[in-house]
Length: 168
Length: 218
Image (cartoon, rainbow over all chains, first blue to last red; front, side, top):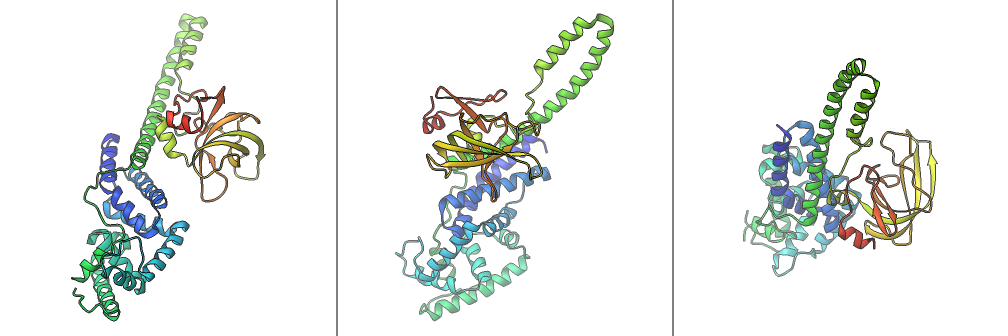
């Protein structure tokens, strides 16, 4: 692949996925400027990898990099703890016009991290199976098994907090 | 309402429909990444040109024997003029936007002190500067800021000496550990002369109006 093709493909990848990666990171570090810094780092790594491999990287791989970049960032770690506390209190930045929101946040805060993570990837980040598989470095089958368990767990918690109308 | 709908409705940062919409910062960062590659390509081309010039020099040597020394001296001078700047192996930013996007800190400052440090793997100089104005980054006005750079002469891409008392615009890169460093030996600093930024020899990039305005430069 020549340089022009490489730049064009990377530019398309960047334009179509920057927003998704930014929001993926933002949900985990809660502060706009930090999210932008970390997203820049994700695409810097992606570009360096593209150059090394002589071809554009796959979209699912981007989310694995994003997850690792967030985990490696001290600031994001602090923000993650703040986000956890906010979820536990049911008062995140989401508006509370929907009465279910605090119930859902509370239930998510009580889940094991692995269950919470896959539910957030599925329903908030809207990742597909291949993306979740790459981000978590597990097989497609394992994604569905973990997702099933996480749904059961969150349903149990929401039932316990008085929301008895949950269906899967 | 289904479980999936309930969880989706609690998303603090909902997904959006228009994936191709980029913020100005995102556009700058993309341009910066791609321009780094363009520079790589230019440098590889420059190396190819140098190799081709070596062949030319051999032909010139034969010509010297035939035509005489004065003609060879003339041709040699022509060759030297056409060579790229000596710092060309250092990354080179083709415009102010990519230079500004890559820098973590951009300040106008006066050099208060420089001291050489030789304990590391290469000689480096620690500069202490007094900040006059800030265009980007966390440094505060009138604060002292320290950064490091390769001691002049210690490497092919080391910068020219910074003069104590001299006023400059610095483009710095922050790291997880240690002092910030000059973004580039050639483009990491601009001298301020009579209130105007002056690029180092070989640096053809002029600063953008917005940076000059933030730093109160002409």
